[in-house]
Image (tube, rainbow, N blue to C red; front, side, top):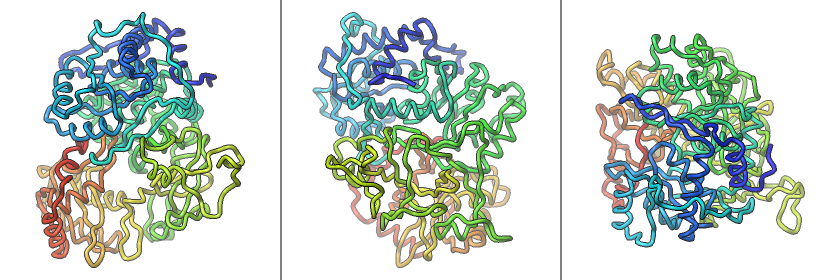
Amino acid sequence: MTNFRTFTELVLERSEARKDADAFVFLPDDARGSVPQHLTSAALDQEARRIASWLQDRGAAKRQVLLLYPAGLDFIKAFTACLYAGAVAVPGPLPAEQGQHFARISGILRDAEACAVLTDSANAPAISAWLAAEGFTDVACLATDDPAQGDAGAWHAPSLTPESLAFLQYTSGSTSDPKGVVVSHGNLLANEAAIQRSIGTSAESVCGGWLPFYHDMGLIGHILHPMYLGAQGVLMAPFTFLKRPYRWLKMIGDYGMTTGGGPNFAYDLCVRRVTDAQLETLDLSSWTTACNGAEPVRAETVRAFNERFAPAGFRPEAMFPCYGMAETTLLVTGIPRGAAARVLDVDAEALERGELADPRGDFATRSLVSSGIARDFEIRVVDPETRVEKPGGHIGEIWLKGDSVAAGYWKRPATNKEIFDAEISGGTGGQDTDGQDTDGQNAGWLRTGDLGALHDGELYVTGRLKELVIISGRNLYPQDVERAVQSTDKALGAGAGAVFAVETDREHLVAIQEVRPAAVATDLHTVASNIQSFIGKEFSIPAGNVLLVRPGTVRKTTSGKIQRTLMRKLFLEGGITALYEVLEPAVQELIAATEAEPEAEAATDAAQTLESVV
């Protein structure tokens, strides 16, 4: 679609072409009657030049700059300014007033070796105090909404190539080991082109949503994609959506939005929380691509959303299950344009063995939603242990190649060799003397850590390799058990549970589930007993450990992914407070033993966890 060498060149051209047209509209929370905020392309260009001049004056070109903003237009101006300055933007979550994110942000700042922090006037004092307290005396802090800072006339175009870094995308993880995905201008342009080809967007599209701006789907899909297209973006804060999901859907109709989406839980939340009266005011007929990604897509959710919002003009073919990750910049696969989501029912027992097989009579089945086809990537399904490629219909680790795949994690050469430069056993093509495949692509494959299978050319993602629950030699996917748990009582929050295994002399299943006590028709003892009974019947395994907890206990990332690894850690450390629990004696002993061990990073890791989004 473009002949630009860098994303900076593209944005400069788009700004000149669009000038007085709105680049973005931001909808503040309407609790006090706030009106939409408009940012024209010309105003964005002028502000970016001003802030970029400040960065260039301080030698920030080709250096990392941390961006800490509340949701709003100031973030977009600052990110664009980094592009204009030739600096490397590092989007991060704004530390909350209580300071629970400061540990994570400190780790990112140190790892990225940021030379400056950009924020707004409201948060600059707290950010400056934090920098001083942490000893970052050489890191400048700028409130970019101060018009006296910088001079647009002093800005000069940076010298960049496709290999120049555009930004670092830090993934959710431990504070002690933050990992920043290195995204080049070439990666970004390649993935934006892949998104455009996959969903058919154009300059007439209207894109946007509510996801955090520092999240890869929120940044690349909802902010940078309309910039790439020369189209309009419409945005709101995550908190606005979470308080009132109706506002997201109303925004789509009010602005004629065509493209945008979120994780599966967002669609669940709309089904549960949008009232009949609100439904009558919605018009979703313009919505051609409702992206559903960042976590496993549930067939139940797709069916429920399609049915619930059909009266508002939502069409089944608009639902767009997709798969991607920060390590590939964003999008990898998506369903074919104009096709409704494909649901594949498979035999549950065969799935546990690692195969996709047709259902058998009255035997248990599982429903998988296709994540579509890979248009701009090579994709293989590989045995993670032997590194031998799996045949179609067999589950393994998803491995990828493509121009959108990042060079690796920032300053992690050993990890990069393992994750970004993997080799399939037996080889899949020769290499020349420069270590390149004979087809011209990089020799190494990206190991995604995700499990899935290819069936009829489409990718079915089944789970995360590190979260797979192996009991009695059977492979169980935690999301399947979580759904089963939540189906036993209406008082149990959908998408608000975590299932994992702990080990003594054998593996033990643990199910932590949020419950609304006021909605329980019987008592918590009965609820827990019903969960144990149903898991035993559905999966033929003992469920000796069930914890019913308050809403908000189960930790998630800002994209809605259950942080099962963290929940397992907190559980073993005795960090989960239950309203009611049933624990096996061996598991109780395991918790006590773990609590007694010194955990230097336990408090830090718990503090950094992103807030629950339900």
